[in-house]
Length: 88
Ligand SMILES: [Zn+2]
Image (cartoon, rainbow, N blue to C red):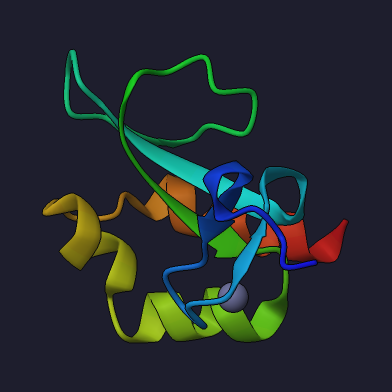
């Protein structure tokens, strides 16, 4: 049986579909355009997902995939947070 894509999210880096738990969620807040890590989904806004692995995060940062998807600059703090996620 194929996984039901309704419940899956696509990584913007490798384009694989995965469960939400396996991804990092980054959201541009609809209220103030702040870009934040949003794994508990408390922020409403346009979101992108990236696999929790070094390759996908490094690739997304290098190719500015997050910036392009959210049409905003990625704050340094978010880049630092992404690096922190990898070290956990
Ligand atoms: Zn990925």
